[in-house]
Amino acid sequence: RRFVSLQQRYPVRMSLATGGGVMCLGDALVQLRNERFDAHRNAVVSAYNGATAPFFLFWWCALDRWWPGTALGAVARKSLMNQVCVGPFNSAFFLAWSLAVGAWLHSGERGSGSE
Image 1 (tube, helix red, strand yellow):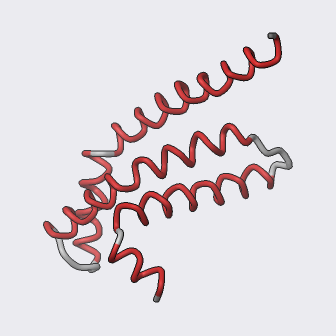
Image 2 (cartoon, helix red, strand yellow):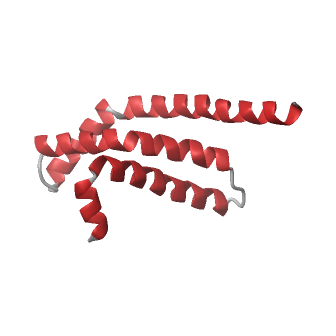
């Protein structure tokens, strides 16, 4: 109940925290299953998911206003609209974010040890 209450009072903050937290945990579990943990990768993907989660909060609320309900037809329309309108851009932005932030994080490593 407390979590739902916080979501209702602070939807953007909770979306950001939940998006980043769920991705952080999920990515960590996947990495640990492979017996190797890359903290930079985890930070990059978690930050992206947290940063974009508020957008998706409003996007899915809009889709829910256009097609309310959880019936198969409404869910299918929302999912299709999401994949057509947002999917390609989200994938492209995620790749660009991963490359840019990953390079930035690794550039700091190179400079710190040689000086």
